[in-house]
Image 1 (cartoon, rainbow, N blue to C red):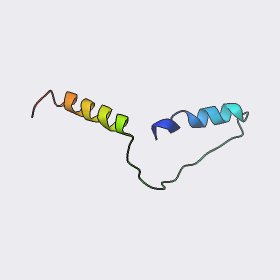
Image 2 (tube, helix red, strand yellow):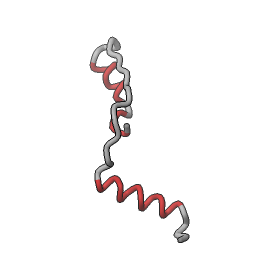
Image 3 (spheres, rainbow, N blue to C red):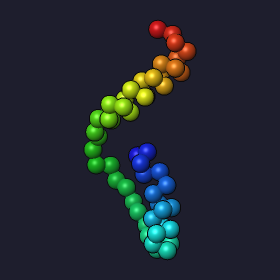
Length: 51
């Protein structure tokens, strides 16, 4: 979903305002390892280091 941010405005720009899009859920996939690691670091940081 993060990769879709701004897609609609780019599509409208490329198509001269005539483009449109819609999305529908298809399936879940595991996040890439680097994304999992970043999210884990952010989560631990928000907890204030508590264990």
